[in-house]
Length: 369
Image (cartoon, rainbow, N blue to C red):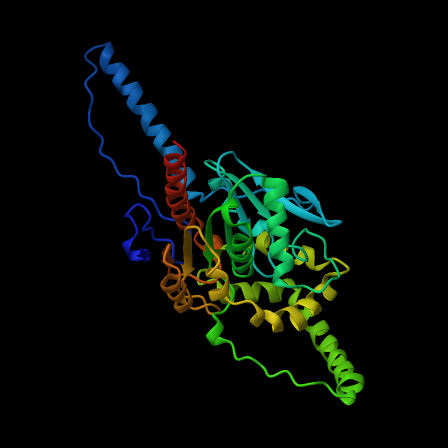
């Protein structure tokens, strides 16, 4: 069932889209005179004062915003996968939920989601190979590389059926991994996912290369790409440039802060980061047509939740509606935000996730009884 921001429960319909993103709560009450006739009334007064003080503390906590994962420059946990170092965070107990970041981000992009979700679930956030605190491997990157990474992560680290949650590139990675894992995945959540439907991709006619192309034109093309992409990478890793890009895809940019910018610039300082960027931009990005949303969705056999920022300048709301039409077991929740709803409006995304996950947990308990 499709859900818009306006149709959410009143408790979630918060005024958080103004300049100050923190929801505004107003505590209202009336003071009533209490006659101290006996000891019992003193007890009532004491209890009432305690209740008011507790409420005041709770209101202060609400104004301060959601809890945030501690930023650790050294990272959290590491797993060796195919001789490569893979970084991940794990917190909480319960149904496993695996969070997968988007292009250029890391596990720290789930900073506001991990603390809240880990109150009820065992939450993992993993850095994809080539990104974040994971190793910058010099390989030919492909969607299947990250698919295999997440498949093995679930089998070797999580070790039980899990829910996969992904934003942007991480969303498509979650989807292809779920298709491969089948019964080892309880559900999939996509937040403004990458990927295209087959009929939107214009197939290029591959012509047989002649000697001139192989020996002269292709090397010149690669040299030109390296020069251009090398400059673009240098520019892209500058803090001011990163801040500018983030603010262009966050409708409310209050959460575009030093924490977020540092979590992106630090991995970019890795000696291999420039080469990884070149390989991603020159080869992987141009080969995305090999894998389509419809082909992967056709292999999926679990509930699907779409959490969508309707004002995303990169991935429009139309894609979410098309996915919902294509795959029957889908719920759509949308908010008037940008490309990264989990970081722009974490309170709302956390609430939507917990609501959907609780339904999965209830179904699983019912089936096992």
